[in-house]
Length: 54
Image 1 (cartoon, rainbow, N blue to C red):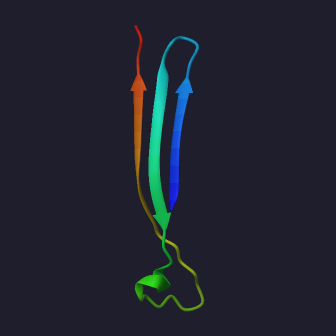
Image 2: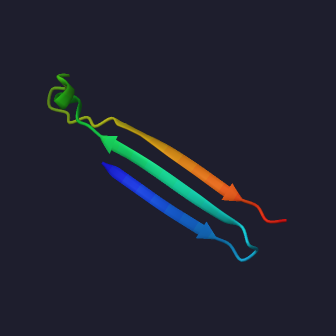
């Protein structure tokens, strides 16, 4: 499980917030035979929010 929060602040008063959560699961854990390959598909959610100051 990956989880990330960040905030960027800029000299002109603007700022940006970023939130993300995700996960990697091997296909073999889902019962899918991938032979000798280890395949890890990813799934998740990402949200960015910025504020403008005029």
